[in-house]
Image 1 (cartoon, rainbow, N blue to C red):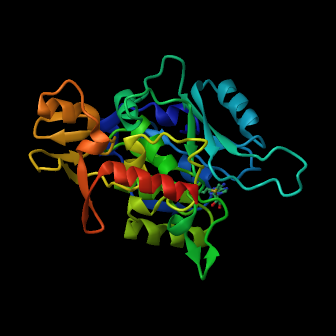
Image 2 (cartoon, rainbow, N blue to C red):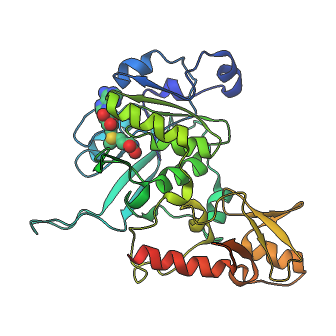
Length: 329
Ligand SMILES: C[S@@+](CC[C@H](N)C(=O)[O-])C[C@H]1O[C@@H](n2cnc3c(N)ncnc32)[C@H](O)[C@@H]1O
């Protein structure tokens, strides 16, 4: 995840400030981010996701070995409190073409609060549900952005370092609430804005390159469906054979709001953004809710729940198999 700027900009007495401020919600501010952030009201932002260029030097949060150690030291010197360093392990990294070093296959995301005692949001339950009832760990295996999710202009990549939506999805689902304001001072193609919009978060972007701003505006207006993300390039099933139900939701194979039902259609449940299911007032994981509704001690949700996929009724386990096949490409 991310954090940024100066601690005062983030520690906010929430809704009161948000309602009263002339915040440029849902807008991309053109220009230099340091200057633009200076114009934002104090204590108006809930979360900052900063994805700066890799060889730049200010307050950055996601980065690689080129900058992340320096960034971490600066954040600590400024009084930020590091909560986690998340390793984003790239399932399909670029090879080291010269063969002179190890393949650089990960980036680090520093998640920091504004101080040791500062309050912050962590949706522990949502993360555990997303991960099939296992605590979400600090190593995330996700593919780099590719396939239909990768934005192109006249056939050429619109941006060299577009981030995968699945990464931002997890960051926001874990550490923001509905209606929170997410600021991205290095907006690029607007991945943060697109995911924020889908998840019901407010967003503000800052970007200095007009060409990227155009791409981002078009992308967010079109609200790319989540199932465009992460389909064609991924990790091998051998290295990560296990698939949590939340991964299907997070990468767009099952959109939040989709209805699932058992084979005989006695029960219907709706998929929620964190990978949990709701059926009337009952909620739970695919396994827990299936057991609860049947009054059974346990249930294999993968074979119990079905959905419509390309005009056919299939158990969600079939989607899991398709997902595994896709990520092996
Ligand atoms: C690593 S890219 C971010 C990519 C973005 N996360 C995405 O998914 O498309 C960094 C972006 O920051 C922009 N940038 C660099 N320095 C900036 C500054 N001082 N103010 C505003 N934007 C800046 C660059 O033009 C670039 O688009």
